[in-house]
Structure formats: C-alpha cells, structure tokens
Length: 48
Image: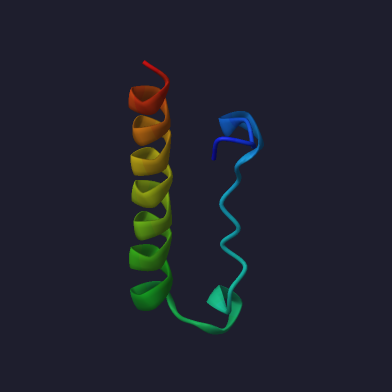
C-alpha cells in the first residue's frame, strides 16, 4: 500500500460469483465491501 495510491486499489468480485446463487453471492459481496472499507480506513489512519 505504500507504493500504490488508495485510489488505484479496486475490489474484483469476479471470482466464481456468476455460478453461485444469491444466498452465496450477496454475503460474499458484502464481505468484499467491508474489506474495502477496512483497507481504506487503515490507509487513512496510516497516512496521519
């Protein structure tokens, strides 16, 4: 993260989600969103 601006960090959810139903896909996407929020928060706190 020290070498890559946070604006260039993207979450790529295309990891087999197309072949799964909503019961698996929705929680997986929620976890990805939460992980993104954690990384962004840690990056902001790191830069202080």
